[in-house]
Amino acid sequence: MLSIVRPVLLLDEQRVRQNISRMVNKAKHHGVAFRPHFKTHQSAEIGGWFRDFGVKKITVSSLQMAYYFAESGWKDITIAFPVNVCELNQIQDLASTVHLNLLVSSSEAADILARDIKTDTGIFIEIDTGFKRSGMDVDNIDAIEKILIRIGTNKYLRFEGFLTHTGQTYLAAGPEQIRSISAETYAQLRRLKEAFHSAYPHALISIGDTPGCSVMDDFSGIDEIRPGNFVFYDLMQLQLGACQPDEVAVAMACPVVAVYPERNEMIIYGGAIHFSKEFITIPEKGPVFGMMVYLRKEQFTEPDPDIWISKLSQEHGIVRTVPHQAAHFSVGDILYFMPVHSCLTANLMREYHTLSGEIIQTMNS
Image 1 (cartoon, rainbow, N blue to C red):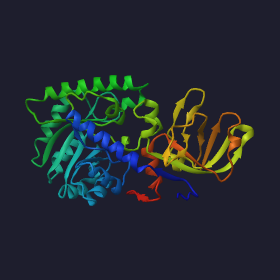
Image 2: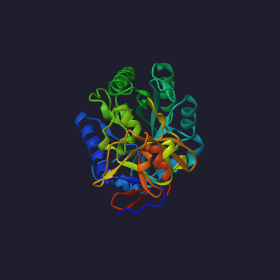
Image 3: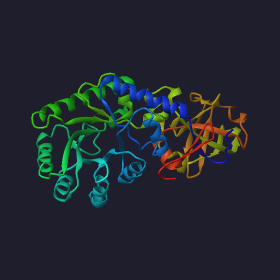
């Protein structure tokens, strides 16, 4: 029996395992390697659930996270974040114990690695296919070739391939647009791979966005997928059409601390330090920072369209309802909310409470 007195992040282990199984099987079906991103859950215990499905290599977003999962036995790790050259000593220390891949996003970083790395290390070149965050422009063949040549001057550096994050899919209007964006990205990467095939025939193409990996049914030319958010999903993925309500595996449980029926609002103990300030926009509601779900028969329901979080401050959550709905709730009630972005919420909460009452720690606990 759950005993909740303050904000906690609830986790449905069965749904998590089903999400893992579904993505593992999808990768197998399409003949692509599966290197899941662990930045979403950041938990050694949940990482063990991936092992139960045969997963042997992972993606992380920081050197600290790489160390954490290396200590729990993971031996093949890609840090999918532009290499931080200020950490080269620690990077080489870790690379001496695991198969470590780094991400090069600029010629300057390539120059420093080629000069200073003295430990066997894999290198992916980050490619920008339109998201405009970091990486080399997919069409700048000359600049990419110069990086490859520079990497080749250091015997300790192994060129692994080209890696991208198709962040544009998070801005899509729905599944069809996700498919369109992804298909164009894959075509760009196939052309890039072909341009370097004669000199680098074993170069991999690695892609990693949950919307694309969830809805695409054609991965032609792709060698590896790295989704992360799919392990929990969230309100953003649901709005995008990347998942179904019964695939969302987490919900924030928050006590009601005040009710104002006359203004159709409630106040919950659950603010920006619990949810983050990520929001989605829903017509006639405006910014939405979470939507209420119910816990029935040990499962979360789909979101209630009549009850949503309309505003967050540090500790407060302002819950808006349709007229007369707020009067049905009382101070001391525990309400459940599907978070907008489960990755950030999980990072802030630092632990999970399973529906059976177990507490699962993360690297930040």
